[in-house]
Length: 358
Length: 189
Ligand code: SF4
Ligand code: SF4
Image 1: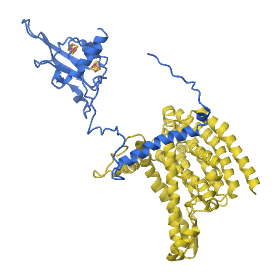
Image 2: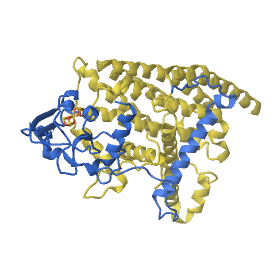
Image 3: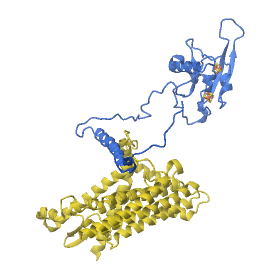
């Protein structure tokens, strides 16, 4: 009992360390540097400690310090309680979603089964969507409570965009569900041990639509209408400063990691390396003993998983620095007139194929 | 020379599905990314930088500004070591920000000497808007927009430059002199 609790605690700490402690600050650096390299620039490199710049990595530290020490400004006429509450409402779902995302398979360590997911819910996938749509509240309340027209416009766009794309996202997921026959993310991941059973081969259209819809959910370019700098100053977080702004910022980056993780689990074989099955790994490292072999397999799988996650983060960054922003009507058209019928067709075709195969 | 942007571009079917075009765009940006990435780490694979990086490390290095650049206005000092200015006050009148202040001086009627010169000439850079009207108004080619724009002070009073601080030998303003002659000559004043 105590051991189970400890294991869960370790897993929670690991996920928190990886998302809040590692990915969120490092991604701010990655975003700056990657855009610079893509545009033939040099990028942030001025923050230094004793003349040592570490390729601009200290900018993340400088940013954090800046956010901690900045004035936390609440505009006149704003609803103080909601204004303070909304960044929390936006950030918490982003972190909580990670609790059902597995980052490795199941291993026997010291005669104990360890499952590399914080809580292996039966309805894992549904949980992800439920929590992800909760974060809409954070953004809508942020815009409404700050007593600013730009913010309100931004939050209205957020709500319409998120609701539109949630439909597509849910429907693309149905295709995955039909193929793997389970809502448990761990089982979906485990079902993709065979390279040719990866979601990208079974649901190619679903992959593209899921990626588009999830980038739209995260409100990143090319779907960044809610915070369009050139139209709405900064959209729903116009009136936020200091740590509250930092929370919105962090929520965006953590959601990026979540999207990358979900895409990896659903479409890119989760923690499996192509053509290397867990059994093969275990037999190769048999000489280390049962626990040793399991440990090596676990480290290998976690490494593979986060490598894939890193790739998809890179991919999202590339999309962000390549494509221009859509117009508002184009976003709605894409969501309702193109992605929605396509995802419905995807469900029907998947069903027909499954029927023909069985 | 008005030009016309054709906004009714007819896209082909291939362009309209958009996905291939996204991939093409991402191919271009990723190509830049990887070429530069390996250019930034020259010891890696021993490659050299393939693309030129245009970044200028500003306070340490600067670019040369073009002659048309309007920095702070300065007074030209001619070969005789005197300002070209005759204290006519035209720049003072032309200045939309009222930041020029001239106190003229003149000699008492002796022939063949300088008749008028500014005893004091003050420009308040805290007020100046770098419009260049003073330069345009000047009949004596005495006041020029230099290429110096680094005028920040901790005290607002220091922003008032007097005659000595404003003086710049005309040899240093050659480019701008040529430029003004060409520009204002063209407009036929
Ligand atoms: S540049 Fe314009 S504002 Fe400045 S001194 Fe000349 S006329 Fe006045
Ligand atoms: S217009 Fe030229 S000559 Fe007249 S006062 Fe100004 S700088 Fe001197």
